[in-house]
Length: 455
Ligand code: UDX
Image (cartoon, rainbow, N blue to C red):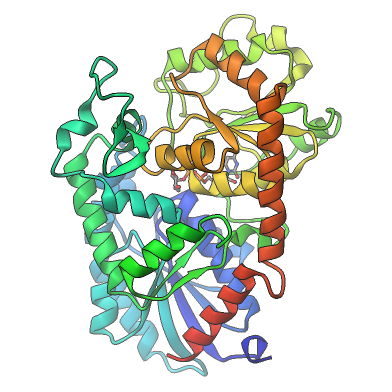
């Protein structure tokens, strides 16, 4: 079959250096490798992927100067600052490295470069070097549509509303799925966000195509709308992590000892809590969360990343006697093998920040969610989860122990939780069908491979 034939073409991939972006790019690289492409990963020195996990790839690190500023950030970072910085500091090293790779004598021709959509500067460089660029958008299509519609610049005051403002609970006219209380979480820097998003969307439109880590059945109408808007080919071949059994793209060591603890728990009994690689919470939020977990009578597995609690190294702020109270009912780890935890039969719900990877991973395993979004795309993903797909419940008013106990009970024990489990179970089946021969993601992958071979 044409798409499976051995091809001697090289693809260069360039991820943004953050966990939620590196993982899908490396997964995509693996997928394209199985279709016969040679793979070169160009990457920043900051958050370098572990080369030894990918002996079948060639790696080209470039200088980014990012470590010095990233290491000074405490608390939840401002992504607009990071993105702006990287889109400047990487231009020359990226151009130099790409030009060298193109000039290298070798058996296989470079077909294209795939960069994270957030590296919008790369389009101009690719154009200069006459190399097709495809953008990988690691977030959802719905989120990209919302970003495009929201009045970041023109109505900056909307992003500063507080609970006391009458509009706080109202829908945003430009994107009625969202409430003003959602969009205030997206960014503290609306002007900076507008600049980044305009650049990103313009350079997606100027690219040769967009790859999305999503599947058609989940976002069909959003896909139709975005395709009309962007007017370049879109490929929905996700969820990428489902193509391979275990992922090795974690930047932090995963604590696998908890899998044997999970083995001892009853089916659908464990509350899994994790807020991804970047979210930070205050000491009082952390303590309310701990009280909420201590007060429920269910087993829980809680990921507390070192540095996640502002002003603490790790667990110093736990309430007194918390560990004695929960004993073997609860486990706290620094980082988990999340896809495996979600796939474990004992896991009953996922209390998440709704990063897109976490959201997709939960859908893939049919695990209903409790949503505590923090920033950027997370409040948008959370609305889709709770109000569109109805596969999770938003913890609307932040971390308060009574609210936490109530929402866990609703998802784990009540009828509405059962209905969510049915709906997400149905999506899980759709995912499984999408990635096998004839399924929508598999067809989209075939189209992508043919498209790249046509360059
Ligand atoms: C960031 C943004 O915060 C997110 O909103 C955006 O969609 C992508 O970039 P992050 O916060 O890390 O990502 O969240 P997410 O997208 O969910 O990615 C986290 C990844 O880390 C997931 O693939 C998850 O499986 C993995 N993970 C998380 C672990 O392997 N172990 C853990 O304990 C927690």
